[in-house]
Length: 63
Image (cartoon, rainbow, N blue to C red; front, side, top):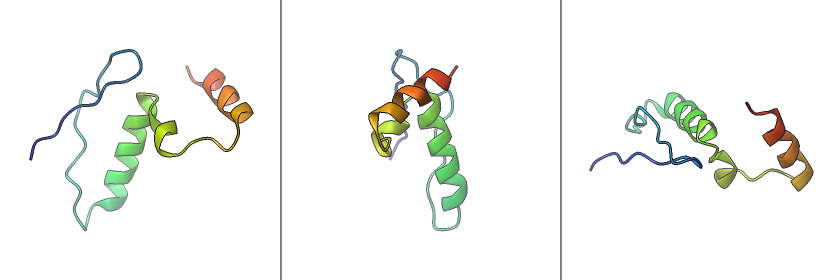
């Protein structure tokens, strides 16, 4: 099994792959994967915003 990088909205990819998920490292893995997906602006695909207005505000607040 190999790790494949995923691209962000601007054609970028994450510079470091997510660690392999094991029974002992779930918390660390989850934090890292969420941060990587958020940096690539893909986290909304996993957990959609509660309403459209909050999504617009959240995107405006991102650098």
